[in-house]
Image (tube, rainbow, N blue to C red; front, side, top):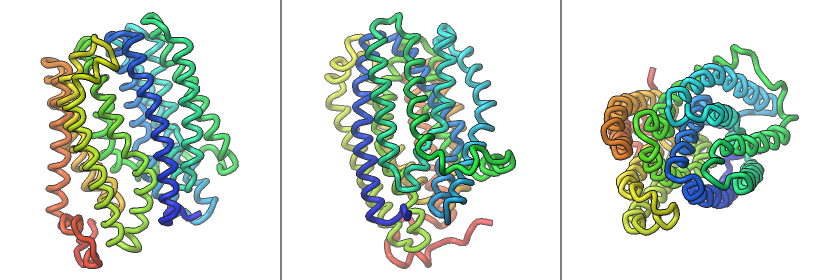
Length: 430
């Protein structure tokens, strides 16, 4: 199956976005439910747990989906795809062991999570299981629709369990075990549907280590920016009370919904752009330009709507205990257009051209800024301090990407749409 043909890419993209529309009904239902049922303090603990779970998921992923999708697109037969699957399983398993230990340590370090040890341990398990998600494989082999159906089944399961068993603040400890049940259901359906495509569940340890080595540069880019983004709420829970965690977490979740809307396009279009770069660079550039224009316009519209509607929508949805989230959200939403630009530069321009070294250096620069400013700002100004750290991190990443592209003479190709892009390409890095 050729998953990069134009017609197929459009069909898969439509299928993925239909799934995403249904998918985001799920958090839109649960966000106000958690806020009103658990209260600001209880919801702050849930948000801290979700942040830690997502951080574990991102770390164990280690750039594997991007590398796996890129390899699968160019696989010649089912045997090569089976080898890719097995090495992906082994790579994730190798990283799961140290990550689980660090995750349990993170639970003990956070006052909010250590007060509920069972909830904290389940959070770690949920993050580890999520890291073995097969969405990258379904989309890169042209089966995004199947992936969406499985995820919708999981969301319906978790939604029903949450509404059935969580009714008051004392039910806080049930939230993550119920989410874990839903995640197990999704994994069983996904792996059961492709069990015959494995030649063996795990590859050799050497193949897993080789995958880690090949993925490390992409992880440095995505793992030092996105990983710190997902960890922000957890980091805040170490230095600030639950009320500040709740204020920041609500804003972070809403902005994350906006950023996550770019994920379906990335799943389908990054392999397509990668393919076109090799056969038709001008067409690849034109597609990347259309994607960036669409997403940036959407981000600007989201910023305008937030400024106009936040004062009315947040109290209506979450209740009167979340007024502090309004000011935090109005500043935090400025992250949206900056992050969109960074994603477009990385996913649709540099990664398809295998300029992973540029991404690694830019990611490290962004991570250093985030680490240096997040802890002192969060300690002194709570939620608003963490928002400031996030903005500085995104600005640093954008500045670093542009500087490296100028120095590498890639900036001209960024704006090229004709066949002259071939003459603009710099020499490959040694």
